[in-house]
Length: 336
Image 1: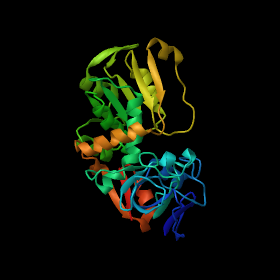
Image 2: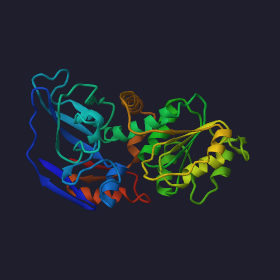
Image 3: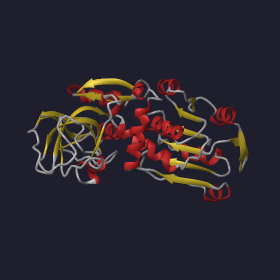
Image 4: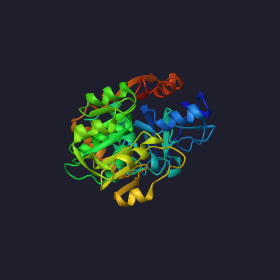
């Protein structure tokens, strides 16, 4: 089978490996499409320990949609030909391998396979390309859920990448009224605007002024500020936490989903008197998969439109480098 082996910074072997065989309780799936995650970009561009735990010398990739090609005799409710989403946290029986499921290889062995556990069925209402985005959309959906949005609340999402857009869509799905997406890439903001979101280039626009104009004003510790209930950091810039602490209204919350190593200073006194909440969000749970499936099946949002580039498997390194170019790419997928 075709397999991509990660060797370290800017080093991938596209090679042939023996195809896996299913045991009595296992299945084997053939990947149809794989999406490139920001953590895939990080480990490729900068080396191990900069994204998901990816071991040099091993397969990697984890955002995919697949077809079942082998089914063990003891497996229930899964049959050859089924189109499925392999759930990365459990697909290999080890949550620590969520980033190394084998999304960039042709076939994947899924041990002890159970439907709606290791794999989820994909509705015919969801295209192959859109289904490749289920995994990153569950990450964004989890971030939105962690904010505990209430009907009619307002939100700002930092980051117009796949997860940021997914979080914005999930916030609307959960009942938020107005949602703004911020980024410094005009290319990505154009894609977000095409989905119906208010956008702001916070690299060259005054965010507080733009947000106050769009959302209205509410009391903050330093006077009037934008009337925003929820902030989500899906970008990871060091300045975002400081931005929230300075412009967040009294009684608001911020969810951090961006993966960025390092420590950030927090003004505890400001946080206390402003009644701010800082919430972490990592990964996803089965409830997020179900909500993302519902969102995609609804057809309300043209989710497939955020896929800006498609490459054949043979051009995987070029695809990852394209995904790293945030000024000219949004989501990049691999086809088999």
